[in-house]
Image (cartoon, rainbow, N blue to C red; front, side, top):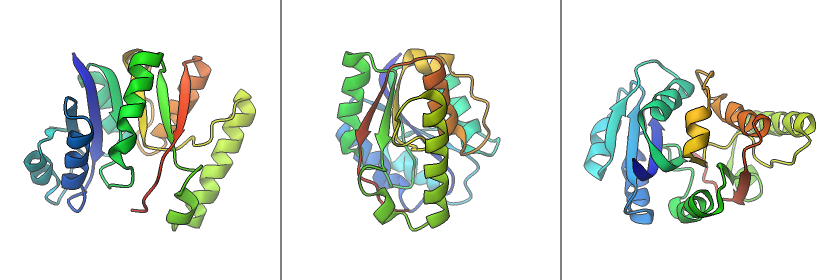
Length: 197
């Protein structure tokens, strides 16, 4: 079993994947960095390998399908999930790992919305949708999660192995938040910087 596994789902991220892998290997030198390729047609796989990642594959298209494969195949005490597009800085990784391994947190949420997200993100409809989903879930579960849809998270072994991934695509992050709330997993949020893709 890995101590820490960094999980990076990828589809055509040749412009950024090398930097992302190197950043995480520098931030968490003892972690295993896995890139799961989802039918890329560019040089994502070659560049990920060159940067030092372990590359695996999911041929069913969609981020949810990739996360399902990762969660089935990887055993770790702590998992960090990020995107391959370099929108999430690696420097928050140690804090996230600390919360999972030493504070018994089951899901750490990298909260973009309390920092630079609304300035950096140039997709106004995306901002509106994020706010609407967040308000709905917080009302239903009587909670106050600030960023329901972030792709930057850390998880415990228990969370990963009990999470029944149903989503095929990008709704996976919302599903993770709902699962954690419904099953009363311990959740923590940390504000993170966000860079527009």
